[in-house]
Length: 407
Ligand code: AMP
Image (cartoon, rainbow, N blue to C red; front, side, top):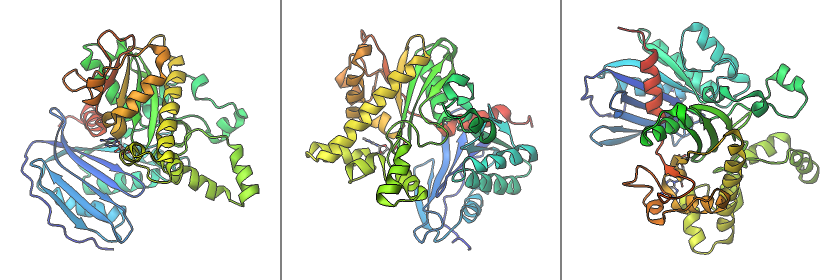
């Protein structure tokens, strides 16, 4: 399948830039980042890949946006189009977001043939995400063989969890033979906001104990103790834990057998429903999008209201439970599309956390902590809560710069 030749913006920057690639199951995001300033000079998203509606959208630093249909484009074909659009930029290295690093990868690595082969072995535990990651790695290494390529793993930050936090209470052979354990995800985001919160608090990450809540379409919490992840809500896959856009989060696994016997659903069907038709969407019957649900809730829609309530209560419960990994809490940090933008969700969640004696500054909460370095609790609150926008691409660009071969 050939992609169309898009009329993409011209390059304007001659600074060495890091290309960050984030290849998901049906989408591919890229960003060209100046790692010192964090400036994104050119970025884009190809989504709905392999469908008739596949679309490439790009944005230049000046704000010029262009879109081009790329019907039925695969990951590989859309990468070709993206690479062509980058020909006038000076790219210094390529950073790849890799969803699963299993137990092999405790930190970011330079991708050589051995690392690429090891990433490929993670395919069995992440069959949805690992293949598109590999397609992007292989295509980019072929296109830019002279550049350093770095893999930054979503799971790596959580490899510091102690065995009692990552081990499930199932026959131990499941772990030994099949590596069934908690891995945790969103590690790049939790790590970035923990570092950024430390900067805002004029402290070193090593001196802080934080609870971070990444609340986007996927959602997870993390206990970050002295700069290291010590517990997190997602598990073997990104299904466990919080209520998400379309994922159920925590569930009793006996429901599989019950629904099979009562409703004739197969294992595949229940799995698909728990991942794609549950969460906010399944509860509300309206949308997986928190913005829509808050509008419907305000109009009195009972199931939209219930969906928001279940989301906030489960979040508070996980924050309380995850706090077991800390001695004290220096701050709770909200991030992700919902965490950064949805003040009613933050308010309701902090109300459920009354046992921590958080006093919300309602004006600051409604303005997402503007002018107060993200603080949304009063200055005398016993619990400090912050809003810190995440920037996974920047962290990937910085990791790539750190591991780059000297020129
Ligand atoms: P993400 O996956 O991080 O892009 O986050 C997506 C989620 O953030 C969706 O549920 C959006 O509805 C939610 N979101 C984004 N902006 C807002 C907003 N202004 N108010 C409430 N939710 C928002």
